[in-house]
Amino acid sequence: MIHYAGMTDAQGCFDSVVDNDQYYPVKKISNESSYQMGNNWWMEAIVYQIYPMSFYDSDGNGIGDLRGILQKLDYLKNLGVTVLWLCPIYQSPLADNGYDISDYYQIAQQFGTLEDMCELIAQADHRGMKIILDLITNYCSDEHAWFQRALKEPECKEAGYFYFRESTKGAPNNWRSIFGGSVWEAVGDGRYYYHTFGKKQPDLNWENLELRSEIYKMANWWLKKGIAGFRVDAITFIKKDTMFQNHYPTLDNGLYPIERLTNYPGIDVFLTEFKNEVFKEFDCMTVAEAPGVPNEQIADYCGQDGYFSMIFEFSYADMNRYYPEWSVDEFKRRIFESQLSSQKGGWLGIFLENHDQPRSPSKYIKPEDLEAFGDYPKTMLATLYFLLRGTPFIFQGQEIGMENYPFSRLDDFRDIMAIQCHQESVENGGSVSGALETLKHTARDNGRTPMQWDGSPNAGFSTITPWISVNPDYLHRNVRAQELNEESVQNFYKKLIALRKNDGTKDLFVYGDIQPIESDDGMFVYLRTYAEKRVVVVCNFSDHEHMIDLPFAAGGILISNYGLPKLDGAKLICPPYLAIALADKVY
Ligand code: GLC
Image (tube, rainbow, N blue to C red; front, side):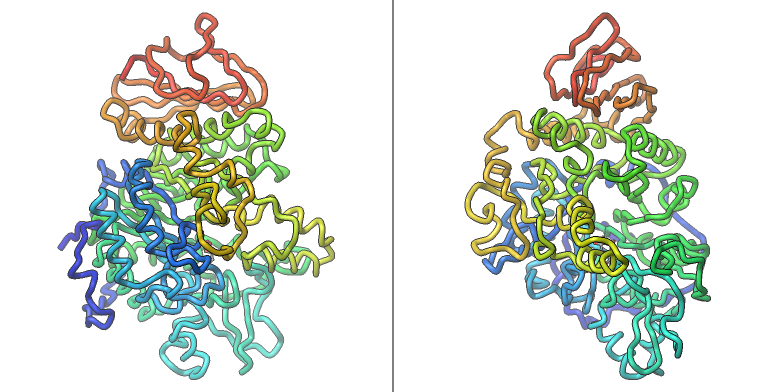
């Protein structure tokens, strides 16, 4: 049976966890697929990413929760978004803020209950919005019952769900985990277990058929609760080189970065099976966090027969203006390259921010330009990515132009990655202040400070001091203030969203082709075309004026952050941080 994902099945939702759901045996590894790249609903989606811990605290304990999201559904509907992606809300010791799951079938008590989750699905549905959840399958928590049993009984079935290796000479190899230090952790009985990220996140052994069946059963269970799909976490790590041999150390501390071993050969077999055992049965949306997928493989991941509906491509996101390779031109080159590759076969989730990134205005725009040019750089960035080909994602707070937190002490950071990487850098001889300076610009906590709802204490997020500090700029940068200002960043986002939904322009921006237009350094220009319709998107990603030749005589302005365009014959005069979309006619 094909389930319609997103359909609220209140009955299904309240099924008990021990409902003896059919166990989903892994039948066979096959390559069959029924996916077609037609006009899928998720191509028209506008996704809003919620980091529940920092969205809205309904019960005054300083941590956001599901009932907090429920209270803000009308805000989200009014913004115009159609899909909500919730970062993990499952039971967890929250060592990595929920990406360390101790029970896949329960909600963390800090976030609420399964009933709250079901109500959220139903209430979102009532407002025409769907919910997708984070699906975390590369690792679980060391507090998960499987791992606890595996620790106590080395011969038990669950021990096979993890990668344990014996060693008498220290860590079994020299690979470095993403949060710093070895990927191996000793358990005290001669065994070590493998973790790609934190040591409280033991990796799950996808080579183990029973483990895979457990994962598929769990994912199917959630889809049957009425969610519309998943953001599929860290999926390019699931296939390992199980020889676990040393690699030539490329880091000063003699380690080899595990990031280089993503998308390992053989992963296609697991991903095909995952699709066949779970996603294929549902009209669901899946967006894979897929670092390490080269442009040539985008079609395998998310083309007509791809494993997922879409992927996040990171080549352009893993760089900011503090990196040596940064330039607007390089940023543009990387974005256009992945756009053109996905256009040959594939579909991208397009984004500038998420919970693992600093805020985009701080990431890409010089502080003096943010000061001098007001909101123009922010509305330019918004236009630049929102009108590309793919499904746009907005991270909470991005729509009001939130900026990085002014970190000045290590104590202000909450992210395990920030704390461990700082420690590692100092242990390797780096200065404390140098490591702190790097963190200020790169730390994920920049994107995790509480949502700024209004100018009241704690930005209206909570009645008590929140788990992570509120950005002091909330007094002037908040939802309430922007709702009252027709010219705000938030209202600009609403206009961009409307362009992807309105009858006259939806086909162009959702289903149209993209063609980059060569332009000066600092200019970011592309064409979107659909049948006879044409629109040119012009963004000036610089602090000075440029002139460009328009590819056709403009007949209508679809959006502009500077009002009417200034033309000099067939040339468009582009003031600093201009963003404009000009169509050949009025649509
Ligand atoms: C994913 C998540 C990130 C998390 C990591 C390890 O990349 O996006 O937030 O820290 O997995 O759990």
